[in-house]
Image (tube, rainbow, N blue to C red):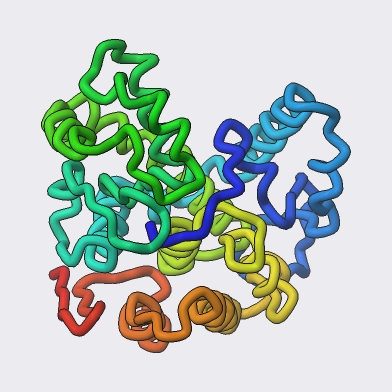
Length: 309
């Protein structure tokens, strides 16, 4: 939601990371809580992959390697209760509620130049992800109430236009959102494009539950892009300024740097933007030393106070 147009390689999310990891011999002197990985293998590996099929095969191998590294490690934010908490935290900023499931049917044009924003994670008609969601859902459930809008969605992708969508698309979205199958489709697309890549990369960087959420919220807001204001661009800038725990750096110091970089990016896009989802939520937890997101939690977003016991 509220993001610039995405560089979205959804089928191969590893390829859009600014830094790519491979397995390295274990270093008993390495500091930090992260896995023992080599930071030297950069994005050149992705650039060297030949063609879409070669890139996909390379990404699958990288995924397999990182899965092996993470096997047996704590689930962190991926644990069911922690994932639900993450959704509550995101929903407080995206939808001003802790009841994130109430947002399946949400849809409106918020005037940010991205067309309609909809659903639990703010899928946008102007940023590829809503189109990808409806395409995948239609493949699994032909004849659904949104399928007839696919030609229009393809036409408006990358713009803020409603051409071919008005007047019926918003009503069709709300109706489809009452169906469990479409709710599951939203969940799956959220995980595929945003949650799973963010949490996986946070774990590889040696970050605990708070850091994993910091990455996830940034992925949601900024989108999985490599531009200076995209998630992977933000992470690369933060790593240049402060070493991650995997590199032997302080987790708290690294997260503080990442949040600084993120706020700068938010203000670059809108000088008057409200950054409270960082200032009085994530940074509050960080300042309290709550790297594990231990409950109870209390935070503010846009002047509203939220609590999770």
